[in-house]
Image (cartoon, rainbow, N blue to C red):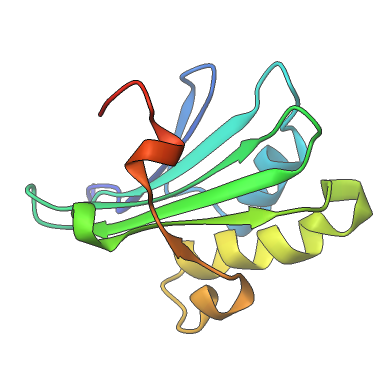
Length: 125
């Protein structure tokens, strides 16, 4: 059996290897303030690299996405100022699916900003 290339994990610690597009969409739809986080992680990359895309709900149900390609110098975030039911899903779901499938152009949907440690993790790394 082949090793998984992708793993999706939720805030409760449940994980799914090589999730289908349908699973990714269902897991996104299940986000709520009790389970406000999903992460997609590439497993088919060198061990010293970090490739992930994650999404978190804010308290007002708007969203923030974050991705990392390789290491800390390629770490970005983007805010989605809409709740899922107000159109945020139409922005976020294609990004999740395109990133998972390695389709080019997934970055073009959102205004990505370099990760700012002072803003994102004022308590330290």
